[in-house]
Length: 298
Image 1: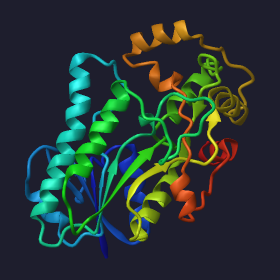
Image 2 (image 1 turned 135 degrees about the vertical axis):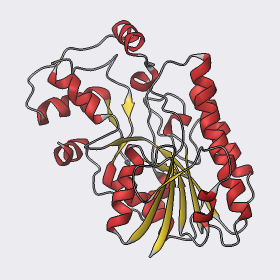
Image 3 (image 1 turned 90 degrees about the horizontal axis):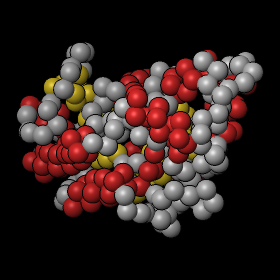
Image 4 (image 1 turned 180 degrees about the vertical axis):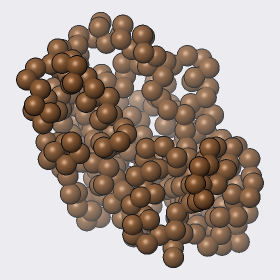
């Protein structure tokens, strides 16, 4: 069986990929600080260890490691967000350099948040505008660290992933709770674009990148047609048979974010991202319409 290692794979996205690749006859190993299964291997995401032996003769290494950005951007949290991404990427690169038969492909996470707020201009891999704030600078540093590592036998790909819609994780469970409480109206202006991808298409896209050995570089992992916040919330209400939802002006979102320990950027930033390279390479999405996707997930 072909072997895949997922670093930082004990969370939502790792579970999606573990299930998908296991069902497609791959042997999957998860690198995690909290191993709970036989195929879960301990690592601290900073130092070499026995985990590095798993990289030998593997089909692919997928790195999802990084502290969640769903928190307040305090000085301490900013440092943890940065270090968790840079340290894990650096030590994986070191492990690859010491492997006799390293992974054929290394896919490293980034984020669609690397692009500037935009309600009109579609951000492609080639022409997307990359700006200068905390979140964008984290993504830039993450990608720079990745590409500076020399891996002559290992193909390298960065995935700039949008919001992944899933049954058991990502943004959807939180949005469902808001709708059930009749608080699922638009947030802010409601015009901000929401780039997203169905969990199954996310896994299929990763498989596609691994299976096509000529592909490398940056890929936007998102549907071709972003929705907007108002349409997303309306579709959720319709699918959940909830007749109305209270709107949230920006000032109220600021208060709420402070109370629950997060940042309004996660809701108010307009992510208008286009998967130009995936489409050029012939990848087909099973779920392109947000209403269709929500019906399958709800």
